[in-house]
Length: 174
Image (cartoon, rainbow, N blue to C red):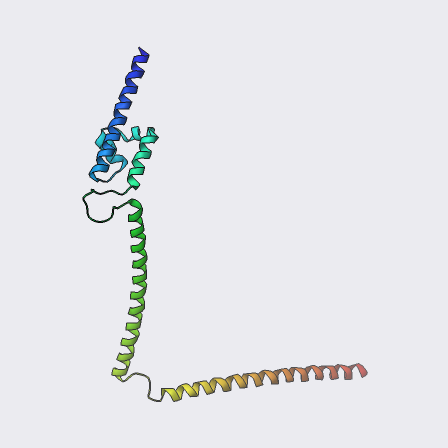
């Protein structure tokens, strides 16, 4: 009796396997999207049946990666890999466009600010270049004076050291 039950279970399993293969072939032929849940639903089997039969699961995953669409559709076939590549390209283009828009907005803001300053009369004075030259000259003078001050500080420190030595020498004689 147990062999009859085992034979019955094997036959039932084989019928379900055949329904899965038929549902997969029909989905590929119709150009419908292939997924584990969709094939399980069409074959009237539980998804766990597919996960217990790895060969069927591998067939479904292979069909998912293959181009799908009806043979009469215009254009190249679409696959998961091509859709992912299109998505990555679109994302990269979007990132480039956002960067360019930010740069253009910043430049527009600067130009509008300059125009507003000029029109309001609050802009930079007419002798702006002369003031810039004065600033450069003052910075150079400041650098030169700082160097001279450091030189004199060094001379003063040397004089103090010599004075200390002379004072120590005089104190030792006395």
